[in-house]
Amino acid sequence: MHVRHRFTAALPLAALVFALPAAASAQDVVAITRRASPAVVTLHAFNSTGREVSLGSGFFLPDGRIATNRHVVEGATRMTAKASNDRELGSAEYAEAVGRTADLAILPRIGSPPATLPLATRLPEAGESVVVIGAPEGLSNTVSTGIVSAIRSIQGRTLVQISAPISHGSSGGPVLNMRGEVIGVSVSVLSEGQNLNFAVPATELLALSRSRPERIAFTSNLRGPGEGSSGTGGPDISTQNLARLPRIAIGQTVTGRLADGDFLRPDGSYADSYVYMGRAGERITVTQRSRDFDSWVMVDDPRGPMQEADDDSGGNLDSELTVTLPHDGPFLIVANSVAAQATGGYQMTLRSAGRGAVDPGSGGAGARGTIADLGRMRLPRITAGQTMSGQLTPSDFLRTDDNTYADGYQYAGRAGERITITMRSAAFDAWLVLDDPNGPLRELDDDSGGGTNAQLTVTLPHDGNYVIVANSVARSSGAYTLSVQSGGGGRSDGDDDGGARGGSGGTLADLGRMQLPRLGSGQTVNGSLGRGDFLRSDDNTFADGYFYEGRAGEQVTITLRSAAFDAWLVFDDPNGPMQESDDDGAGGNDARITVTLPHDGRYLIVANSLRAGASGSYTLSVQGGGGGRK
Image (cartoon, rainbow, N blue to C red; front, top):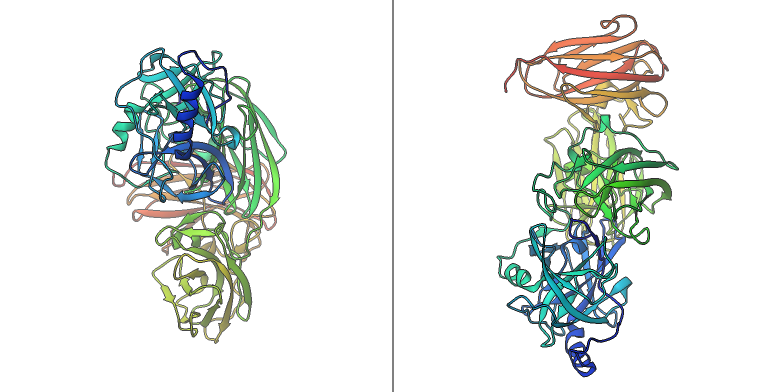
């Protein structure tokens, strides 16, 4: 994870002890090392599930904050800093400053630093002796020496070339002159040369340290558009049309090539993306190998906000990433490179890592967002008369509004039904939420269950699926019980709860309340009906649902074609009452609907079959015929 030009990155910090240059005596190096070492830390990066994904190095600035490389923190959700004796000094969940054109980041002050390092106020001169301290592969306070070989301008950036060896794992540590001042931050090794090692000048770090502190998430795009290239980088991977991407399956290895003309990320790197249809709680391992470039592999949730990445965990320049999937649905597996515009061949392998230790109520383990985001995930069901035992942990869904952990459950309710929900915990102060994903109902309670327990009694306004959220008043973890009791009322006609995609069922209204992929005008998707799809309870046919964002007055034509079954197409307004359907409007067994939309908003497109149990592949296309508001 390094400067995105043709450098191979150095991960954590640098190096081996080589012969001392004549200009630096052993006594000088020993004295500098004694003074500087307490200020150098090993940084551990963790992802949203709490897994350690990389190592790096950093050092304390005069104001007590920690300086490191941007690529060391990028993509993490939490960083911890450890001293040379492995004592944890503290942790950070954001950066206060990030270099947009330089590979630099400054973390907030996390405690009392044991020592700090001064920054040089000018560029060093060629021939000056240097001392580098870092933590390659976590071996803290490793020392190497050398000289400043040159001051280079590479792709518009000023870098300090040094002879002190930098290995993979050398990122973020200080390069010191013989006065003990930081003259640079170790960053990379030039892949085309032997022992061509570079550092970002301390003058750039000095300027960055004087900028106004911000709160910058590690998971945001820290590099800015087009960095490392001509400044013409493209949109990020989440904007891609999933229907047009190839799929990858467990146990499959794909051979590909990054080349000019591939998808261009905002940092100027090329990317190939594959779609994997995952299951909630499933753990997958993705490995990317290449002899041509330094691999960078990513797993992205198109729904957001999960985006996990790895550089060197596969060994050498190869990458490997293990991720627990937060919900059922499509995920992007992305083959990428550390350097901008790097090209060459690669292999991508997807393996199953089993099923994670996911609490039954932790729908969306490791994910984060609002209660509305939690409600769109596939959640375990709880029924009247049932008591669930759960546990809030750091691997659960994290509410971004108050940074508390939450477990979600789905309850299939009936209009007029009166239910009582009780949450009890001896470990934390319980906070209970009942939410209607369709709005506007949202009921909250803290202490109505007595003591620190919570209890809600609510009359449900309509048939459908409701979300029950087990939460805490403060960011806490521990065991709890959750129970639901129905006081009767409402219809009891055996309505199906609608469930979620993959083996669930119900009416078209239930399908319209689920989290579904989107279709745009001019888009065609390839799909398949079969076991595991949504099952319509009125006629026992399989169905796939899609959302279309339309405009008032827009004319839309939808076509469903299949050689495997007699197509049945439905176009529905979830707000009612419009529901258009067609059997053979496209000729033969194919279906087509043309409709003028009555208002702006989201519409439901349903790919269905005429006969119960029919299965097979299909294509579904949408064409907007103009009209409507621009």
